[in-house]
Amino acid sequence: MNKENYAKELEKYIEQKQKEGIYPKLLLHACCAPCSSYCLEYLREYFDITLFYYNPNITSESEYHKRVEEAKRLIEAYNRQIDDKNFEGMNSDDKARKINFLEGDYNPSSWIEAVRGLEDCPEGGDRCVKCFELRLDETARIAKEMGFDGFTTTLTISPLKNADNLNKAGKEAADKFGTIFLPSDFKKKNGYKRSIELSKMFGLYRQDYCGCSYSKAQREREKAATREIS
Image 1 (spheres, rainbow, N blue to C red):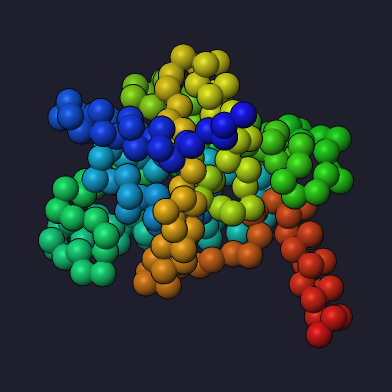
Image 2 (cartoon, rainbow, N blue to C red):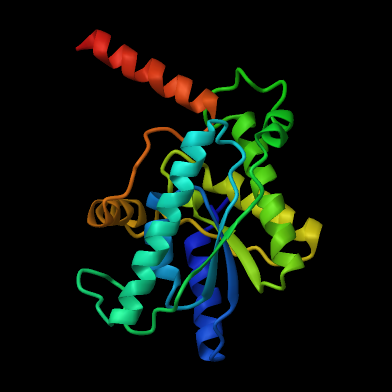
């Protein structure tokens, strides 16, 4: 069975819209600024993007707000480049378009309820799938409600996230709310590597865990084990 090439599917969509002279309105779900950096650099030439920050999985309020502010700061930096016509060090050219920002409701209790009973699952397991479904369902709902041409997520840039699970959740959310999900696998073509470069360029806060208390606890256990070995 051939594995789906989500990155190629997105490229085909972009190529078709470019031939038609259309810049679709895209709602881009964002998990954090570092993961958004490459996705925005790549997509802003082809879409009118609104970055949608919806992450109720981040149960620490201070961590949540820190990540929100970094996402806003990144967007402001990208938009300043367009105003200044200064793309030094960037891959984008003068076709890049300004980016909008939209923050979703911050309601950690909705996430806690969604993953109830899955607290002991390892990272990448069923708890993560439920988390993907919650966040992409809300993105799809907003995309439909606000008249976007489609939506996708920055989550596929992470080497630790399963692109099949994410694209399945996105497609199901799109079907549920009557909108279009654009398949993606942003880690392809050195996307993840580029996100690290951009994070350094912009001095972005780069966390070492996904966001929820369980992923943070697992990361702390891994670091403690490493210290013991060394």
